[in-house]
Amino acid sequence: ACNHMCAYCSPKYSSTWQKSMLVHGDFTNVSRSTNVNLQPLSDTPIDVDAWVMEIQQEINKQPDHSVNLTLLGGEPLMQKDSLKKILELVSSKIKLISIITNLNPPDNKFLQWLLLRFPKDQLHFNISLDATLEFNHIPRSGFDQERFKENFELLRSENINFTFLAVCSVLNFFDLPKYQRWIEQNGFCLKQFKLNNPICLDPIWIPDQFAQPILNQLLTLPDFFQQFNESRPMVDLKLFEQYNYLSQYFERTNIDVNTTNEEFNQYWTWLEERFK
Image (cartoon, helix red, strand yellow):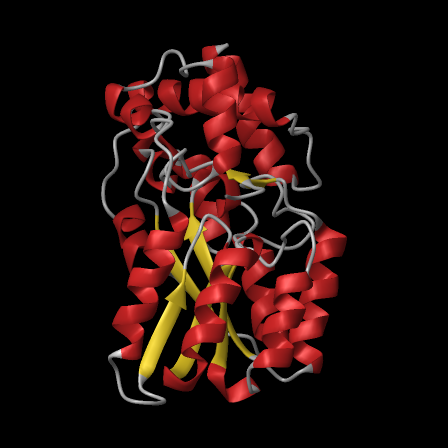
């Protein structure tokens, strides 16, 4: 389950994406690999209790305080019932719980339960945040800035260790200079990752006239951005797919494309004029 519909995600990881694909159908004028990634999951029921028992049995075979447990999603802070059951049964075995989260669940009851139940040195949060709080709803539809602030302050007040994770796509590329400055000014840790899917959202397709001014502002250039220094022909087919994909993403998520980021606005206007 996940309350977000991030631009580069899919029904395999997000129930919000699953619902969109079932209600609205396939994307049009995009590559086959993109649409394969967006295929809805089959409606096969899952025996959650059986999985909980199997996980519990496997963990209980381990020595006390030896297990590094990673909670994934969707959004793990929405999975409170099944995860609570596991964690309560195996707490003596756990050395560290690492949680990959958007820190933006509909409520923070499970988050508060974790903070009360486990010592702070047993918790580490990997927070998926692709952009500044004002811009993050563009790549990660469903993001609620105020809810995030509340949960983030809760972690900081409890002195919980955390790291920010960002997937680099065309939708956060134009905000990266501001985001990196925010990270540096606050002494936070940020790990940036190359986009896997869909390929059309890779920033590499952004023409130099838009990409180079942003690259010149970056405090840190991820290794996978080195390809910007190579000779890069503009590939209209990928830009055409990018425009089609994003148009449908914006329509399905009701995102207002007129943002406070002027560089992004200029790029989107250029894409519209070229392919609409």
